[in-house]
Length: 290
Figure (tube, helix red, strand yellow):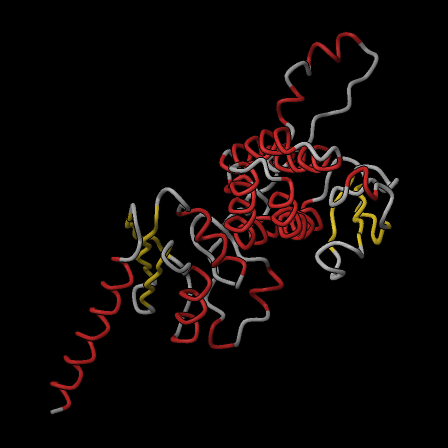
């Protein structure tokens, strides 16, 4: 009787797993080792790695092997393993932060094998006035970490949208938003720092949806409606990844029937994108992001 029950349960689990994977488009399946010990580890590893309709992780505590099934057009193995590392579990590619590993429950603290943590590419050495020194390091600017540049075009395109809305120009707003969609699609997520990567994964779908809506219309009112939520997500992203210069988070109390709305600007002087020339100086700076 007990054996029959176990067979039924195993069949149900297999069915659920198959159903979950069937929902993932462009599915690619890989096996990879993730270090852990117990059922508690299994729960945390799978929860961290799973993304609805994008990625599914099935980890075996006895073999420490995980089966990753994911939409190859939306994510990759590195992104999944980074999320799992952030909750305390090493793979052969990524080490969990020491403080996160130390906070795991005692039964979850697996034996860590000797590995070298991935380090950022060093920034380019500052050029000197010495001509010979400059020649020797002529290629150094190319060594600047790609992580620093991944979101710059996203932010720059956002500012172009903001400027076009200040001018109440629906055509230019749509064009700038098309540039934003392109910038979003060109972001290499595996080049982002882990903390930035986690925020990017949370806001990616919504900023892309808002950008596409703004790009698909020349109706300034409709563009401004989507600009409110776009600004909220860009703010969240900029807080963790920063911009090359100070950015001012500004607020208009009048927009959206008095509910208010925020936007980001490279200038402290208020130029309202929600009303343009009608109420150009309406609003105030509520935060400076440095």
